[in-house]
Image 1: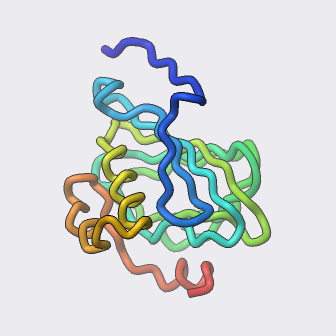
Image 2: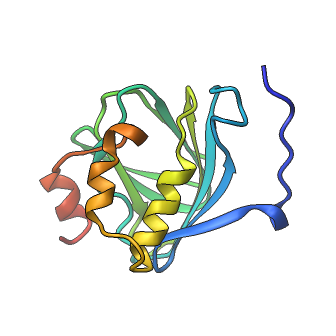
Length: 159
C-alpha cells in the first residue's frame, strides 16, 4: 500500500529524449509500492517518437489528452485521437509518435510499476550528448525496454 500521491505541475520533473519530445515524470514504482508508473509525453509534430519495443512484465496504457498519436501495435498501425485509450499487454511490440500534421499530448502508464524515471533521465542525457547511446541498449533488461526492428514502423515514420 502506498500513500496518496499529489504532484503539482510546477513541481514535476520534465526531461526530453529529443527536441520537441518532453516527458513529464509523474509517479514511479518506488512511490506506488510497485503498483504503477506514470508519465506525460508531449510530442511535437515531426518528432520520430519511440522505436519499436516491448516490455516483458508490464502492460502499457496510452490515453490521448490532446492531438493525434500514431501507434504501432504488433504489426498494425493505429491513429489515436483525443480521448482514445489503448492498453498494450506484455510481450507485444509497439511504438508511438505524433501523427503526421499533429502534436500529441499523452498520459502513459505502466502496471505493474516499473522503475522508469532513471530510464527517461538516461534518454535525456543521451539527447544532450552527456551519455553514450550504447547505454540505452545496455539498460534494456534493467528497465524492461526491449527494442525490436519494425520495417513497418520505420516506413510509417519516414525512415
